Amino acid sequence: MSTPQILTSHFGVVAVIGAIYVTRLLLTFSRRMNEVTRMSNRYNWFRLGTVFLYLSLFSYILRCNAALTGKPQFLLSPLFALLTFHLPLAIGVSISLVVTLFYWGWLFRKH
Figure 1 (cartoon, rainbow, N blue to C red):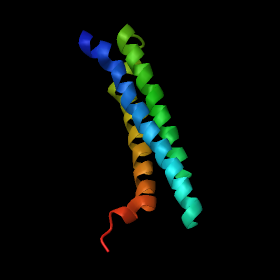
Figure 2: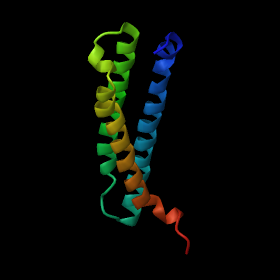
Figure 3: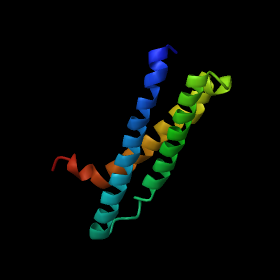
């Protein structure tokens, strides 16, 4: 990584925190909608998605700090990034998307 990439890499944390915030917001809205419509309690899956997003956030912060110092090298490997950042991020966002479509899919259907 070049020096500007290393120095600005911490700005990406804001994007992951934004995804966590949106997931928590959808959890709250879906929980309230569940109280009104008496749907099945699937909004708790948002919590699992949030756990995966927190895992990817922690991994991203570790990798950014490792890029600044250059140590330890295993944190900078593509396999570590795949297993601890990209996969948990994809799983967390996918879980949130499926649950969001379950609760809010009626907004997109044509009647």
